[in-house]
Image (cartoon, rainbow, N blue to C red):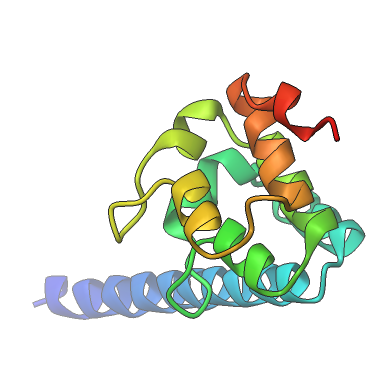
Length: 135
């Protein structure tokens, strides 16, 4: 009979410990999305450092209003943050098709962002396209 109260106590402790972790994760994503939309590179860097996470480890799992961080940066004309994100991601993430089947470069070109500073940073990261920008 002692097993039941111990099991209930363990269940209560486990549920109270795991709930804030999810809430903190949601808050982290919300903060990251806000900083990307407002083109606030310094606060984004600070939040990532405080949370002890690396952008390359969480990039694929973050969605801001259904868009990736880079697409959100393009939409908000957040060039500083977009370049920062592009420089922190491995080229494999930059060349992987997103949810709609387009890579970030294909999406940017199709949506009129081909001449953006973010696109230039992505092309530099991918190792190509640097010669095209000389006018």
